[in-house]
Image (cartoon, rainbow, N blue to C red; front, side, top):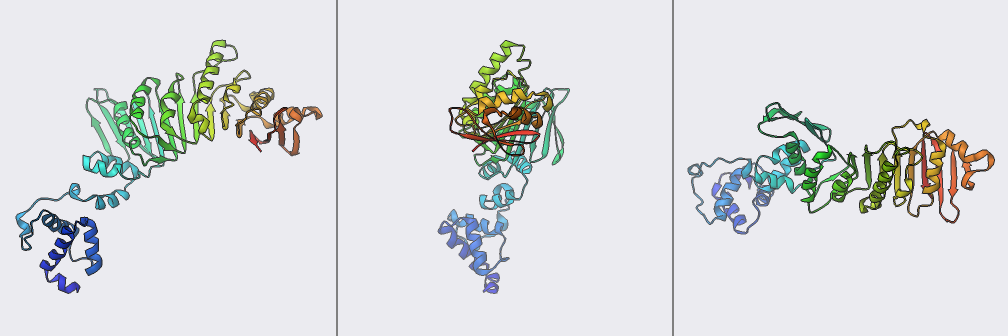
Length: 383
């Protein structure tokens, strides 16, 4: 049968006309033909040429194709062929193809970007986007232009441009894909650029899905810009605003209001873990975080400089939370264990079930917590 069709191009064209008149998609029709009579009899580009003629009602089976010398490019390929091609590309390569034409952009935006880790950083003179460990760096030039460099292409100069605006445009391409689901998203942007980022996020009609979101704050407003547009079970915030709350009553009150507002955000209430990196001391208002299901505190202060009495104060407050499931805090666990044992009169009537592990309960509450102090980290878990 293959030989018969190979020697009879008119018969092949009749098969194509049958598929075209039946409105079978061209790529599906081509696959059907290859399945029935074998591969190699006709290239897809030739199949599509005849298919489109017949679909337009031009039924001349003996038309001389050389009279229609239109050059075919990647832009002419159907979506069914473009998608398998783009599936083989790395995320950064897809971003580059996204800029070629509206048609390719439409195709790429309809696909799962298969991007897992995304990082966006911007300072005074340069911005940086990392796509699955591949960096694209945007550096401001001396004459009003911007130098863009990555491992995937040569450095290019974009005249009359701003490094942040170029990077923001590229990151918005990724954010605009509703099929995006990241393992981690990291954002570190100067405070004066946050409103521009807010504009990009507010145009989305869906939330960005990521298993973990991490960002830095400088003026106490960043979480209100970022979190409403993020769907994540793990939120990590690096707070750099407040210092010396022990001696500065104004800063302490600001911190108290800030944490209360943060803990009341629906995104924080629904997350499994809220991680805060910040300076803290014994007056840190941890009572404002009782709405959290999971809480992890990390401080720049050396672990052994945080007194056991401070940790005990935190624990005494947290075990009264009706929703807290896990609390993690880096600390000198040996000193904490000795303080809890309290010379044979254990705090909270703690039961030392085995070395370094205690069972805690608070007066007036039915729930019980397990406190693990076996490492250089305190871990409190609801039982």
